[in-house]
Image (tube, rainbow, N blue to C red; front, side, top):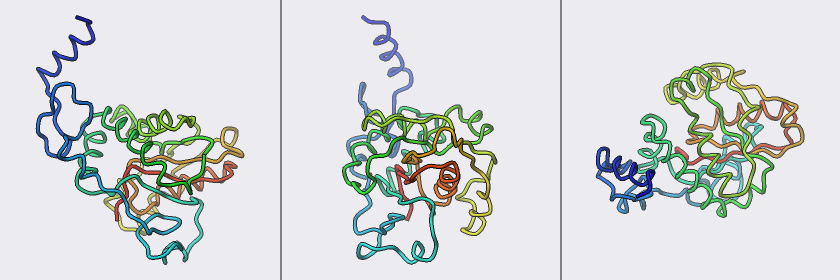
Length: 237
């Protein structure tokens, strides 16, 4: 028997994989991080939505928040709602080290891509970066894993460098909207020699208010990017 196959079988016996949502054991050799019963619990965002931020909104125009302020990020779309199975899946690759779950989620984003023709065809995918301290703690950037799998599925280049997180900001979910904006002010910088003239698609795991994506987009636009949109695995409403 091939050594890699033998190693896989041994790992299955010692540490069987469990469903990221219900935590039941998965069948040996099962490829998905969610069991067959939990896969349907990944819920898509339903139309109609705001033409810019992607939150549910009647009609085809902008929601009140997007009408009230200009934005550097042209539009935001998400493959699923941040509920049930998508929450568990994100926690699995963000906090429990299941990098394979992030690659699988990026594949889901690639399969959902045809639902968003308005995103066009970007020149490059750019993952939302982690601060170097948080990257050292986690060992990987989950947004980069998502972008890697998405880029492979769509045939779009991935830019791993050029956008940097300068501030080790507090987790956004702990803050109100005003504090989130203050927390992220000046948090990102982009290399103008890499992004000038490019149409960029930011990639992240979850979009809550869109503040992080907006700050990234501002940095990229200052660096000369022709246009910036964003695509997340999940959208919190």
